[in-house]
Image 1 (cartoon, helix red, strand yellow):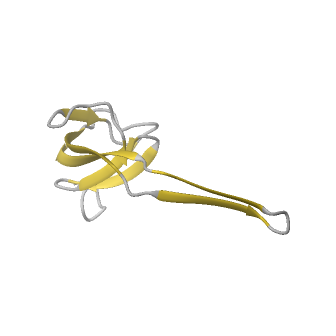
Image 2 (cartoon, helix red, strand yellow):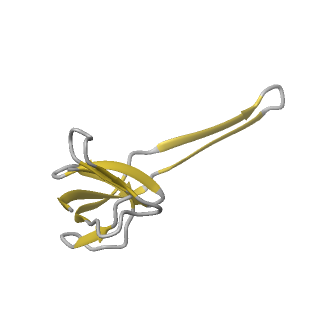
Length: 103
């Protein structure tokens, strides 16, 4: 089974057993959450269910593996010929989730 889900304002294509990194979710490690799928399909793509906004009765169960900070992202701004330069950076807070079940 293949599903498209939306978490943290991003969409992900997932299969059972996949591990994905999403924007930080307010869930403890080891807990499970379930979300509705935007699209559900088999591996061949012969049987596909699409609905607006989600497929009714669909469920994707995710297990929180880890809460962590991502690698540093550099933000550099410059305006030519004006002696204006700014160098900034940040580390995003992320959640590692494993797909347990798709229905």
